[in-house]
Image 1 (cartoon, helix red, strand yellow):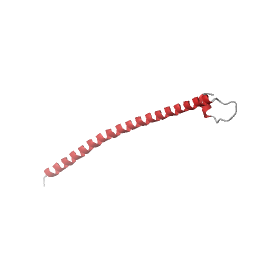
Image 2 (cartoon, helix red, strand yellow):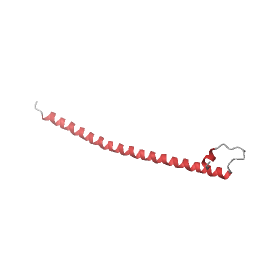
Image 3 (cartoon, helix red, strand yellow):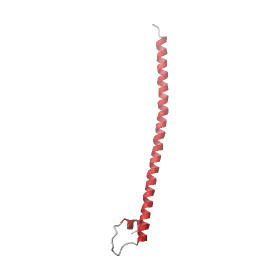
Image 4 (cartoon, helix red, strand yellow):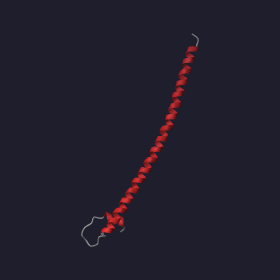
Amino acid sequence: MNHREAAKRTWSTRGDLATKEEIKIGALLRIADSTEKMCTDRDRLERERAMYKQWWQEEQVKNTDLRRTIAGLKGYITRLKKDRPK
């Protein structure tokens, strides 16, 4: 049994238990493992955020282009209406 597993056990007054030092080492190892897990989760979230931000910025550019296109077409329609014979 390694220190991590030993630190997870329920401890009683039996004689086959690990020493206090081994329990401390196991607890520290478990804390280190969970801290590393939190870091990987945060890294994943940061990558996802950057990806969604990039997508949003790209869509904002497309949106601006489409608004300009629509405004130009409206102006063209207005000119056509003014130039048509009555």
